[in-house]
Image (cartoon, rainbow, N blue to C red; front, side):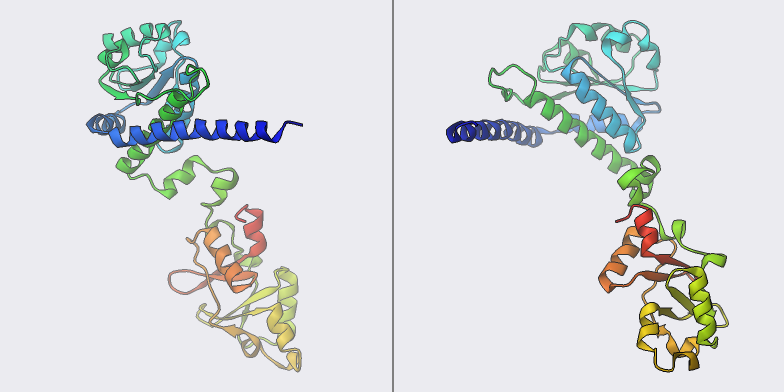
Length: 323
């Protein structure tokens, strides 16, 4: 076991690293100017893709920036600078724009890529700390990282610089999103799976319709209502008017509250009128929030004309991953 004093020192060292990087991020945020706006505009207006390149740790950060851009509506991918010099330059076209990352701006492996960009007049955005570097001078726009120390104990390992580069990439991605009017609906197109995808599933995608939908007329005897509810297995039935609009809903709770003389009643006598409802275009997460708030397990679904068109059960939300 380490001594308590050693643990405290380790914690403080970790906190100091974070403070160093936070200070650098604040410095960078305060210094953003026209070059940032020009870079975002260049990315937004390109007819091709945004190509990211960088060596070493800059390359790792570049891969993440490319992934963020691609997932937010800006076609993008990473090209390794060494592989670029051995044939992968063919991936880059004159319709593209390149983001080239190098803290020093003099990374040897980037020379072939920079020469190619210059030769074919392909616009580029430099991310570097050195305004007088080869990279900054040869780029269309240069975005400068703050003159801040690395957070490692020897002041050399890429820490602060990579954190700032990642944040700058995020800032560019979000700026371009807003310029393009990228919305939640667009986000779902690129994230159909997992938890993110479930957040954009709509009620109409999973609701019970047609023969799966428990639906009874208001004048139907409760004996027949019980048969319908048992057959559909959802523990609920929508009660409809002759014109297809919703009269009310019958749940297991309504059955328990009306046990006395239940079989002498009709669906209309037993139903809860004016229940909570959903619409087909409503997000599944919104429907689930209503059910949780009202402590109910199902919602009738009405279209714009008030017609009873479906039923959504809390189990449908859970199966779709909306929980």
